[in-house]
Image 1 (cartoon, helix red, strand yellow):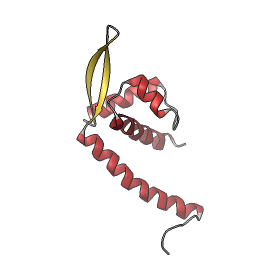
Image 2: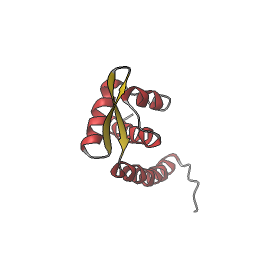
Image 3: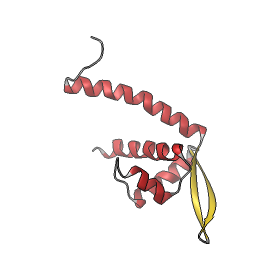
Image 4: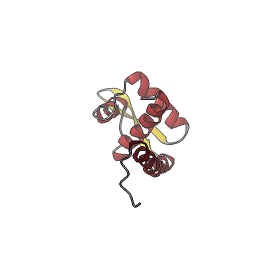
Length: 106
């Protein structure tokens, strides 16, 4: 898969995972892995980018005597998920055109 496409998909997958429930790094990886592979070295830069762009917020919770960073989706993050859903419809139309699997009204 093209690296730029995969990068964008990974960001949206992270947002989707966190939109269901505030989460932390290891849990996010486990939630996403059945759909697309992601490593810690890939996840944490994505989390930083999403935090810097205000699509995620971060807070800490004590767990077994250590602070664990939790990520929560923001309104900007939810807006990006909605925009992705709209963009995906366009991508599926292109896919159907390329493969000849047009299923819409003709």
